[in-house]
Structures are given as structure tokens and as C-alpha cells.
Image 1: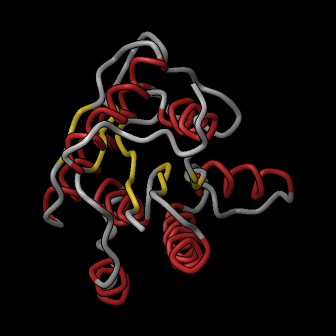
Image 2: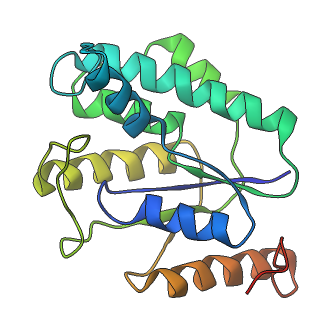
Length: 191
């Protein structure tokens, strides 16, 4: 079962793209970071990027690893992840907290399929909200760290064009078809 990850800048349409892929019948895994922030805010916790960055990084990594491992035993067909545990490692670079060796080892033992799909910074659709309190400048910094981390881990990076979500889905499906040497299959027979 190939596991693909969609990474890139925050506010660049990754979650919208993941939702569109799910609507096409693909298995998807939502972004752990936004879930963590929503949970922490709801219970007035401190593992938040604007309160306790180290605790947020650790929780993000643990939750992302658990999602990867759980999906390995339950999903059929290809799966798309909205970000991954590698983002936690990249976040460590952003906050000047090197990833612990155990984190690096756990990430090394788990691999996504190539390519990694990258949503570049997209100013026109970027928006702050309750879970995304940082600005576009930070989104660009985070993006650069993510790209560097995936490249250093040996992944092939493919940039998803800034286009309508239907075009982005078609781009990914075409790329999957190119990988398999045939036209991409529609997993649920949807159009």
C-alpha cells in the first residue's frame, strides 16, 4: 500500500486538496497539527506553537507516527497524508530545537512513497484562523524547513501547481498514472 504525503506551506491548500482526494475515493489522513491545536485550545492546554513549542513538536511527532503506523495496518490502496512526522522534525529546525536521536531513528524506519507532493506558499489563499495564528512570513520559513527536511531524507519532491483544486487533483492523479505506467485508476469509480 503506497503512502504519499502532501507537504508544503501552511495555508497553501493542502487540507482542501486532501478533502478533494477523499471525495474521489482515496484514503486520506488529516493533518495532526491542526487537530492538536484545536484540542489544546479547547481544553486550555499549553502544547501550542505560541505557548510551548517543544511540547507541540513532541506531540506532533508522536501523533503523526501513530497515524502512519495505524494506517499501515488498516488501509487498502494508496493513502494520502496531510503532512507527516517529518514536519515535526522540520519544525524543530524552525524553533532551533534539534530533533532527538530517537525521533530521527523512528522517522528513518518509516518511509513514504515517492514523490512527495509539495504545495508551495500561496499568498492569495493564505488565511490566519484560530488554529493558524502565524503570519505568511512564518509560513514561508516553515515551508523552507519542510522542503529541506524531506530532501535531506532522500525524497523526490514534486510541486503541485497553484490552480483550482480540481486541477490539482488531476495533476496528482496524472502523476500517479505516470508512476504506474498506466492511466490513474479512480479508486471509487467517481468522477
